[in-house]
Picture 1 (cartoon, one colour):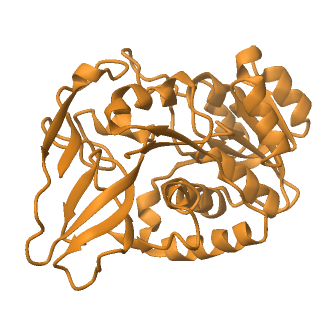
Picture 2 (cartoon, rainbow, N blue to C red):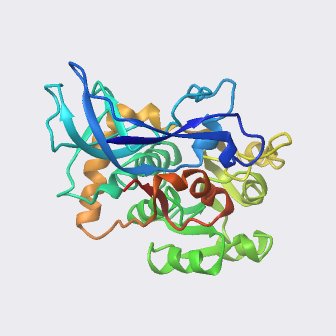
Length: 332
């Protein structure tokens, strides 16, 4: 068997390109005592991967040059010398951009494809779902009747945030790029309305759809859209900073919020979130969201691209706005 893998070859400047990675094909190793071998079926592609390629301090150590590119995965145990895992088990973890992985079992979570399809464990039942659940409920603290605005509303995290907000009795306003994504947000995800930022400045849409202001803003993009929403926040608003995809490929300094004084005027709170902080409670979120899925209250969409060899180009779909839902790479 041959393991196909991508390593980080250089730290990107601006948008990552194929030459920033090295592609290798190497023989699959045999597991040693205490280890297991996983055949990876799906790889999660996330905006955070761009930040992991940079040197410097962050919430997680950077991927080192020559190291297999970090990524969330789900796959099947095909050999095991670890008593905790049996051949035929399915597991999720962070095993990187490769087709096979040797593991000592630490950090792996057993998943059941009979309960949900494997891609769901990298989406609504994985890191995006956990991020949406804890970011909105624990940091955004939505109350029934409040107005919740979500950027990248049809994306991996945004699609879950909007639906949970509706479950909690909130008015939901999405922001997305293009008529098709906005239509999906309203008709399929249940957003009350959605603003298409590609049509121009979003100020008129915010004024029309949030006439009384914004109570909770779940931000996935940063930049101009964050600035625009800050002009509409209400007293004691909560702004959840989940990501800033508009800034990740900057070759100039990151654009900070110009309208931050609105936080002072409205006694509002802006707080960043990193999902790993809630790791001990992932089970709680998975059970609740699994129940909502069973009740038909929560759905999710995956954008699946086949072929691990396409990794560098497929990753760029995230930053070009080409993905529709949670972006995954199907290994084989």
